[in-house]
Length: 242
Image 1: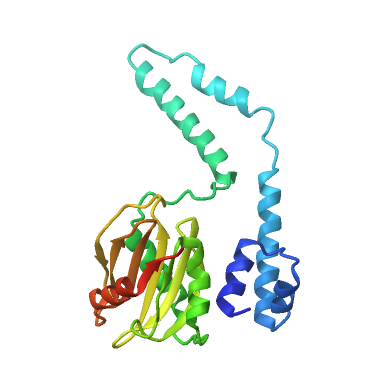
Image 2: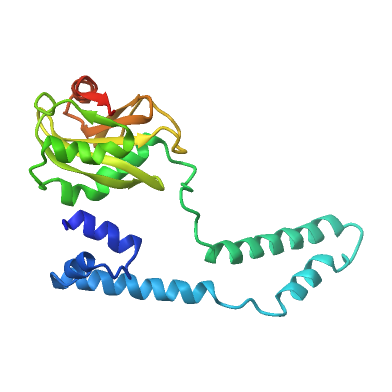
């Protein structure tokens, strides 16, 4: 199990008791420390989720919101302020301990923002990784997304091919050698709830998004890399899997 896959599984389920995960956890001290910290956090979170609500909370809120105002002139301001404060308190108390449903993503995210942040967070791993990926291995990862490469010779050397978590759901993630730097390629299911863009950039990265039959093809790299040229290579090599 490589470093990226281990960390992904650790964050998803630090109590994973499968043999390969346990072996990876014991491989070195840093792995063991990460698992211990995540297990401790998971335990605290479960305790917080079962924290009982005080019996007097409802009565206190009702008294605060329904008590008559001291005068006609101040009725609107004080009464509505109390209601607003109580509603805010209840919402804050409840949502603090409710886990987000799978697939729910922050409203600010566009497909480009997710892609650039994903590349940025995993750059310490993907910058040097080389798994000697073959055409067969690449297509095995692409198969769930209904597509495959006819060949990878014209695309470039593939350093990495795996599944990743992309805005609350799975996506394929490839790392390919470009003309100057490594290029990150994502195949994201078209029904993923993200704001659509055709191109995107920030101070470090830029990329393009191409709509396909079943997926969005997202290509990201450093500013000096010609992502448009890489998109053309990938589109020419991809075909729909039978």
